[in-house]
Length: 534
Image 1: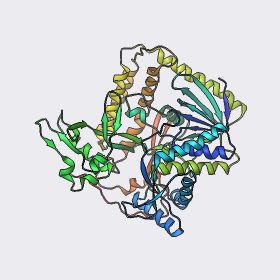
Image 2: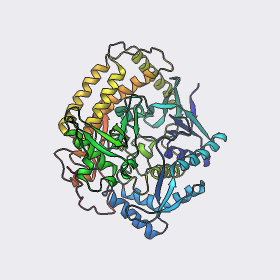
Image 3: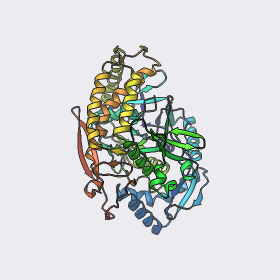
Image 4: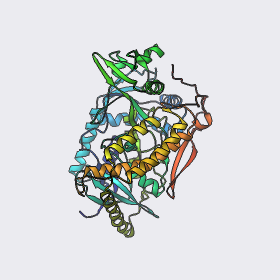
């Protein structure tokens, strides 16, 4: 296969990525879309949801104020206001696809909400994408994942990617590269999964910044098995069809949510995760949390759902690197208030459509399409192949699955909802010990093609390089916010609350700084502390 010259490369067939691909194709641009899944398989659990659309200026102003206030005044106020002002056009976009929307009530008592089926919306977006595939304006590469970013002094030149099935490595040139899926899965999942973490690490080494690295969304009812993790619906609690309890060593069951909260069936997921983390932290060895559902007792814990941090971007979704953009869960631009102007599905749709509009207004997208840049790609491709050979030469006694499980458990403990600086400091030491173990790793499969053990080994080494960035940000964040409850730092810190962490990688070492949030439009009010009961 030869190098392929494309106008724009989109990494991830997420809602954001598909919306961007559709718009760029309709404008006549050539698009190369990488999908780690079979196209048509939804990237996340999609169901009935609500979307807020403000039709009048008065409603748009109120929409903006509600979004900022409910988000604790986080996020880029200018960008949030733009999204609220354009929400009516996104409503029309969904309707033009043929999606049925019904007026809905908000549990917060707000106006202008519409209910829709996310799975149906995703399938309609895919239908539009397939039409562009048929016209050869969009080329989709299924089961490919990005490994490295090609970056020159003049801008981004393309990517090197790997076919997840055959392990084939190829280079692709472009005038713009867009990240459209989130990161950090390799730290929390011991089993093989869809991951962009190697590409994130490559971006950091080239000079991109990572913001909000300490923030992670957890699903409280996560059941683990040998196959992997699965998310159980919170409806079992909301409808009182299930109860959470701590199984004590003396045989007693402690129904902690019911003991601590009178309205336990209506708690938000982050408060449930906090409560679970607190009761588990004070439990004795051998005591675990279970979901009681009928005659079943299912072991559960707060499990990694998605990373709330992402690449730092400007108002045009461009990162610190010219020609590299990030949208949806890959970006940190709208952290905090990001999902509140609508919801997570609509946020992805909005950022994809907004970037398409931004790019179509530019004559140059910031990438380097020169001949010298294209000649740089084969060297980067060869470097990735050498790394494969280095991994295949490992012949030590350490077991890959055991090391990945150990790292996953370590991350869930240290970077989970309940955090402790003493634990985070030990986490860094434990990661160094795991790195030393990993250097003695041995792979049973020595083939260069269709070697999933090789892919998982690469994920392990990537995760061990990224872990210090997350632990550094978590340790420096000496306050409790959202799902994260910091032991010893229970009171609000307004100075920290209005600043976002920014991690850069310089000469092999992570550097930490705080960046002021753009919150000039609405003056923040003092936050109210939301305590975990018990």
